[in-house]
Structure formats: structure tokens, C-alpha cells
Length: 502
Image: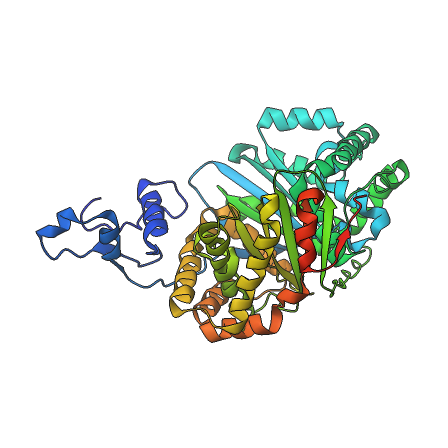
């Protein structure tokens, strides 16, 4: 490294050696690279030359992180918010949209069509082009397109060389705003989904997660699992896709984001034409259903001859995403419990001390507008299934009864703070996060608040949030495994109920 140059220097979004080196150094030494940060090794005598790598790392010093949330430009066209972040490193531009509205808002009878809507936007053609014509234009210009969905939103993006940006936005706009919903493409998508339904039971982990969701959330979109009835031909008519499209892809539901080799003067007229083709919404979206999560302990077994049992468990919690001390304490506490990898207590107990499993992880979901769940998951040999579950439950109870150490908290906070650099490793991720925060009605400075919030968490706050919200004796526990080898041991956890997989 050149004398007098900070290891954190480099182009902001480029792939320079200095930035790569800084990120590696950050990950290895917990010395974050941020604006104004400097890292150095203090030399006191010639003995430094014989230091072990660990001793050398321990002598690294750094200036504390001064986090500054990357700033994006915000505009509006025809009532649609537009987020822009220029990046001139490469002659590429990405245009993306986050659209409020998804399959979870329209009832089970529209679940199949709502799930398939993004795939049909991509592959179903447009009113002016057949699916084959769309594919030919994508191939000719080397466009990269992505379409996806969750229960409450649809996302779509196109990446293109700067010189093809007008053509990219025209084609992408047609695909979003004037889809054809080709019958043959609907049938092809349906056939693939039916094959997936038949093969669901072949993946024990997927089976365990989906069945636990069904147990906990019941007849709520989170608990739905695609079945043959959802894929019945009458539920996948082109007219139904058109109705869902009109309800979701409309102006008031949309946020746009642009990153790359362009500026506002260039992109504004192209987006203005795009927005002109987006119709206004005919009605407000239905309100998202609020789940009623199961609140009863239970042990459930899906019988399947396996060399390893799959264990998942959870119960509801009222901690929600927000700028509250309880939220930050739950996030740090979950990382200490089992979400923090090799430094977490759960993995230390289950893997290192007892050798029951290769991995064990805790989870704590914090939705914005309804309850989430707290729990854990692992895989283990059949004879270790019940002991591993008991050990996980007892590890959970420890954090209810006694606060974690100051060292555990500081190590976890440092890891989260240092990892912030990876939230901004590309302009596209910065813009994507900003669009999501806008859609979730989070404050514009949310990342700054989050960073400040986790740094203020105390051990006692973690103990208090675990004492109030974590109840190991109320877990819904689901195991996928060999009944001949595990049923008897599971019975000591409580009455075992056999689940028949549909």
C-alpha cells in the first residue's frame, strides 16, 4: 500500500483494489471502513516482525465509524416517486420498480394467478409483440430483466447498455403496462407449478418450513402452500390475470428507481413516456389481512424415513419493525442466541459442545404491521433429535433468566456495524433499499436510526425483551423424520401429533 494513503480510499462504487482490500481487512479485524476511517498497526519495537497474525490483528487501531447514509436524488413524475443514483463506472443503467400489491391481498381463489403474474409479465408477450418477438428483442440488445413477487408487492427491473436505454424502457414498459397473457405461456407456467406441487414432499426442509407456516398462520397467505386446486385451469384464465394486473400495476402503487450511467435530464423524458402509459388506479388495494398466529404448544411429526431429522419451531411475538428500543434489543439478542453464526450460543451448544448437528439457527421475524415469530431450526441424526430440541429450548431460557455479557453484546454490535458497508456495495442495492423504505413508510434516515439504535442496546434490555417475548414452553415444534427412530423420544416433549401431508 502506498505510504500516506488510507486503505479505505477508492472509487465509491468501483472495483478498485484498495476498496477490496479495505473490505477484506474490515471483515477480518472488525475495523470498519467508512468515511474518514483509518487503520494502522502501531509498531513499538523490532519484535513486531515475529508477531503471529492474531497478535498483529489485536494491535490494529481505528477511528470509530462515522456512518453517513448514501444520498440519492428524489424526483416525481406524474405522481410517481423516482429515486436516482448516478454511477459512471460502467456504461450500464438499471431501471426498477417496486409496486405495492401482491397475491396476499386478493383471497385464496386468486393465489395461483397472483403468484404467476410476474412470470407472465416476463414470458407472456405484450399486446403488440408475441412472446417470441419479446425474447428476440431482449436477446438482440442483451437486456437483463427480472420480475418477482411477495405477498404484498411486485418488483421488476431491466438492465441495459446506456446506448440502448430508450429501447429498454419502451420494451420493459410494454411488458409491465400492456401484457398479452398468452394462453400457451399460462399453460406452460401451470405445468411447471404442478410438477413443483408433486415434488414438494421430496425436500424435507421445504416441507418442514411450509408445514410449520401452515400450522402457525392457518388460512393466511403466509400459511398458504400451492396445491392442485390453486392451479385449476379456471383459476388461471387470462381474464383473471388481466383483472389482477389492472388492480396492481397502476400509478398510485408504483415507485421507480434508476441507477447507473445516466442523469436526470436524460432519463426524465424516457420515464415521462413510461409513466404516461401507466393507468391511474381504479380503486385502493385491499387491506393486507392480519394473521392470527397459533398460540398453543405442540409437538408435530411428519413421518418420513430420513438419515437426518429436520426440526423447526416457533411461536408468535409482538415485536415489530420500528424505531423502538425493544426492536433493536430483539435483533441483537437473536444474533447472540442463534442468528449470529459461529459466535452464537445456540451453535456453540448444539454443534461445538454436544456435536448434535452441523448447524443450528434462531429466527426472529419483525413485520412492520403485524406480529412475527421467534423460534429456531436445525438438522440432526434421528437419535439426537429430542436431545437437540431440549438443548435449544434450554439455551433460549438462559437469555430469559440472565442478561448476556457485555462482551457478547459489544461483539455482536460490532459485527452488525461493520457489516453496514455491505449494504451499500452497489448503487442498485442503495436504490432498492430506499424504494423499500419508502414503500414501508419508514423514515428516510432509517439506516442511521438503525445503526444508532443497535449501538445503544444494553445486556439488560436484551434480557427484558427475551423475558417478555420468548416462551420456550409454548413452542409449536415440527419434526420431519423417521418415526421408528424418534417418536418415542419426542414423546417426552409432549403428546406427539402425526401430520398427514396434503
